[in-house]
Amino acid sequence: MPPNALSFAFYHAARIVAEVMAGQSLAEKSVERIATAARPATREMVYGVLRAYGEGNALLAPLLRNRPPLRIHALLLCAVYRLATWPDAHTVVHQAVEAAAGMEKGRHKALVNAVLRNFLRRQEALRAGLTAENRWKHPSWWVKRLQAAYPDTWQDIVETGNQPPPMSLRVNVRQTTVTDYLRELQAAGMAARAAGECGVTLAQPVSVDRLPGFREGRVSVQDIGAQRAAFLLCPEPGSRVLDACAAPGGKTAHLLERCDLDLTAQDIHPARCRQIRHNLDRLHLSARILSGDACRPDASVTGKGFDAILADAPCSASGVARRLPDTKWLRRPEDIARFAHQQAKMLKSLWQSLRPGGKLLYATCSLFPEENGEQIRCFLAQTPNARLSGEEQWQPCAQHDGFYYALIESKN
Image (cartoon, rainbow, N blue to C red; front, side):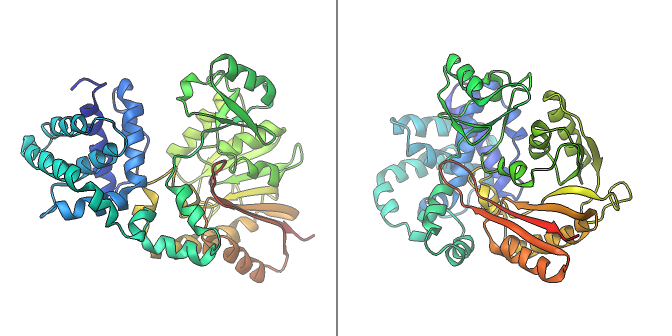
């Protein structure tokens, strides 16, 4: 199969989707192993299939007497997804059958052909038979939590979560300005608009190697909502700052781009610490990078008396589900309580490293109250010397993802 063929994209997208169906987390490196010419089509298909996974399964269920091998099932999901947008349905079916020839020794070519042709004959009735839950394209337990937390806007959140996210950039203000960078984008033929103090949102996503000045460190990819963290924490120049759970280093870099700091970036995974270093090097920035558990800080962090701490806590990632579409299908209801327990331990631990009068910004990319407002209320009730000075819940929309921020100050 040539890399620019639809069958090639089907073949590799089905492999990645099958890995997620088997319980593996979606990783960008899965796409990067594919021939360069096929990456955009494969990436779009994988992410589109996973955003609509619940609907796709519901459409296929009446057409399958027995569950096929996982990769064949994933191929059928990819083909059903592509049939919704491809002008020539017969080409889609033919290319899916070509992809099936390279799977399971070609034993399921006839099945793929039959199921997809049957789908074409019955698709109007099949789509009409979808339940509201199928059309949400989210797990029912997830939607129920959103309904309880956001009774007036939950449908907007769900609909937003089913769309591709925007591609937003953070301009490195040490090297250029938003106005100048917008001119660079215009000269490169890329439409964009300013978003916030140092943000830019592209009209259409592009690969980072096409971004002017990316290699030189003039710009980074970062959601506008994630850029809010540096502005809320806003440490004074020269102050001692800890960025806990810092990988891949986007918020670390943004803090350093704004002013000179004595900054320590910590992450529990050594490999991700190397990623922080790589990103800082590209941006010509420096920080002390440590591998360690924010829930159990060692002597290199404990008692340091940081002026400011960014606690970017591990969470359900419910606010960025459109960007990480495997998340909503791999998460389970009981995971929320597990995350909340871990977050509480982290808050308690990091608070011990904050100097009197210092400030801590608690951040998640979650929409669920148990990880956000409820977490902070519990912490404040148990911590007499803590005072809440600001709180924001960002709901995902066309401009940005969903985030929660709580700025807590230590009383002198």
